[in-house]
Length: 261
Ligand SMILES: CCCCCCCCCCCCC/C=C/C(=O)SCCNC(=O)CCNC(=O)[C@H](O)C(C)(C)COP(=O)(O)OP(=O)(O)OC[C@H]1O[C@@H](n2cnc3c(N)ncnc32)[C@H](O)[C@@H]1OP(=O)(O)O
View 1 (cartoon, helix red, strand yellow):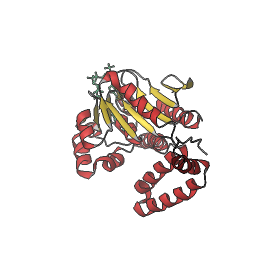
View 2 (view 1 turned 90 degrees about the horizontal axis):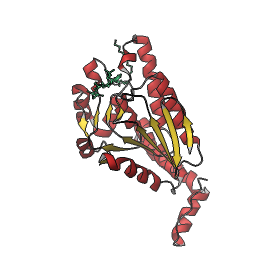
View 3 (view 1 turned 90 degrees about the vertical axis):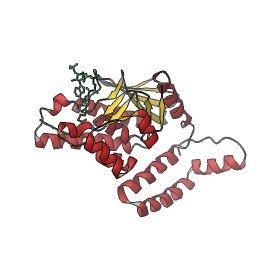
View 4 (view 1 turned 120 degrees about the vertical axis):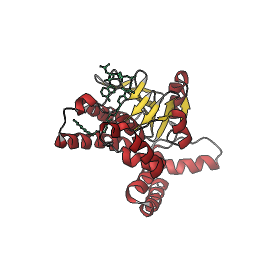
């Protein structure tokens, strides 16, 4: 089932999994139009009552090779800052999506491509993918959240090593460092990622959103506010039908049937 389609982005829905596919040959480089379409595509996936998890991937043998350098060359300071705010906004909305998001890294994820993957909750990569922030080699810095999210993911020394050298990680290195959750051969990546995402579709949508909000609160407002968010989430969830259903199903030794309310 098609949820969204434009020149460069489509969203299909199958078995409760929405798949957002970026298609802008030759390397899926990001420009304003593509970011606008990506925003609308992810919003359509989040809005659909039939999607319970969201995959983001690219066509061809590259995930996303970054912002479109040809477009960047036309920018001055003010328009660069404006583009930075646009791309940060899109990626922040992806990070804040109420449903679990999975980056299916089908090839190089460089610059804005890795920053897009970093905005997703889970990352699976193909074995020959490279993941890096090469902006320093352009005399720039990542402008789509990469300095923040890479440091959160790897810690300051490893993040600065990548940021200051611009040297990408191989997928196996990214796995060892915990930057990705799994690495697969190209023939298996799509199926493995889809099956993982599908395994979540019978789960409790409200609790998924709450768990993500707790983690994000720690990252944005600190640990103490994260503790408070946990308590608030429990208070909200216990009074929902799903909160009752999960406990009742356990006591009745049956599978729960969560309905997202
Ligand atoms: C005047 C200065 C103004 C600066 C303004 C800055 C504004 C900043 C605002 C905020 C930015 C947001 C944050 C994001 C920033 C970025 O993402 S910067 C870009 C980071 N990415 C890269 O540096 C990757 C560059 N590409 C490569 O390293 C390689 O191309 C590759 C992806 C590893 C593939 O290599 P290879 O297989 O050898 O193929 P190539 O021949 O190199 O490339 C194939 C064609 O694709 C074109 N291309 C590649 N990457 C890009 C890209 N990012 N943008 C546009 N086009 C790209 C490449 O030119 C080739 O095209 P053709 O020659 O026409 O075939």
